[in-house]
Length: 460
Image (cartoon, rainbow, N blue to C red; front, side, top):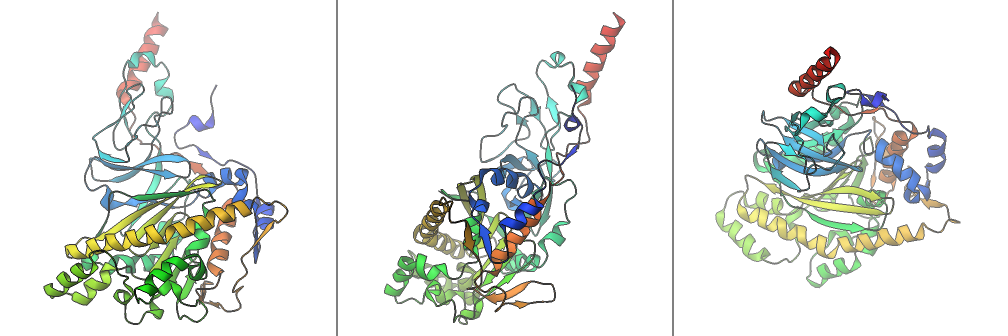
């Protein structure tokens, strides 16, 4: 029996038309509880959101040389970001084309081939099938594509995005105004040189993945949910930015199209990022060492801290200070957050050591507050008689809409939540044509064997 999906590069669009349903679920000022709590909707999200649009899958610095790979997720798909022998960066499905076994279990490594631990099939880093033990037994090998499946990948300023979409929007168009904010993030580093720390800090919560998005541009919660974190700053006579009244601060939030948004705290911090530094282990020693060097002292002090800009690139990448948070949905009510520290390649050692301390600070004392709130919300959403969640704060009244239709408002506005849900609604409305890309170089030696056997059998 044959199927269209057995053809190389077959394009498939699955699932129902949901245009009417998502219009009902997401409205201008409210969102239905099912968006966070319905397993059936979650299944469709894994295809249409985490497959039908660009998702962040890694940074070029994580695969520095030929043979380097890192293991990531694209929705439910296990994928590998690899650098080939030719120096190209590719995204491979981490799935053997024989029986579906996960090829690579290590989170990262370096190898010149990928070998399945089950039956020994071996693949090149460009996805080609290289070696097949006992190949004479596979009569139909040449009839189907056995090279590893691939996703389309593109890179912007070193940040690599991937998609399963058959005809995706150009990456630059999809990023839109968010690209300029990515530029700013890169260019604040000396010579624009940065690298991502190879290991991640990870935390999980029993809640929907979109709660991380609701929270990322929420300027209200910090005063309440992070009260204990703020009190630590007050005891140290430190002006804690998170403790300020969100209605009176000049800080702003912006929507950037395609679900992306940014919260810019800098207008509320005229003295610069270093002025907000909390008392942390080794802070005084590192600061003194940096001041003694006399080189770019103020710039390096500010570089030690976050840039006070939280940039969210839908659906899975959030920049918080000097770290990147990757949102990984595991189930409708189970999410993993992976935090990768960004290091300044051309800065003094003190800068990166202090970045590590800053990174540890909020992850230890602030993030647990957020995770508890996410779980409380998920629990509350189990009350089926209360169907709607309010997202009306700001409701465009206080937001300035620019010439591109993007909202600029204070950090108390829920416009960023409304904006990403509008993109979610667009992606979820109809089946997204997706495809598995494969190498055009076929494993000729295996195909020829099969043809010779078939010809010999016909001659008998």
